[in-house]
Length: 96
Image (cartoon, rainbow, N blue to C red; front, side):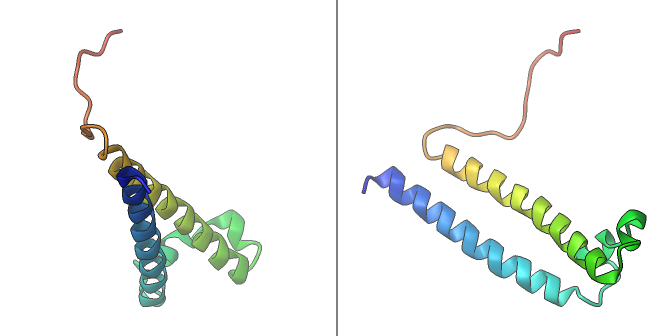
């Protein structure tokens, strides 16, 4: 395997393992915390009409969706850094 491929596999493996354990641990730890991730997302009047079980799983899915987006962004940035100079800001003139 080429160095870059090994590096990419390492980045993905590390990110997925870290994400999986962190997501699980965080949600178990915050189960009874009013300000926890799930409990902050569970209050949706439209979903509440479907019952508490659907309400919980809907909030869990929204949390999963947003955290997956974050981990994919971090993986993409780390992979891009293998070949490019990566900055997370934009400079320049904004034209009308």
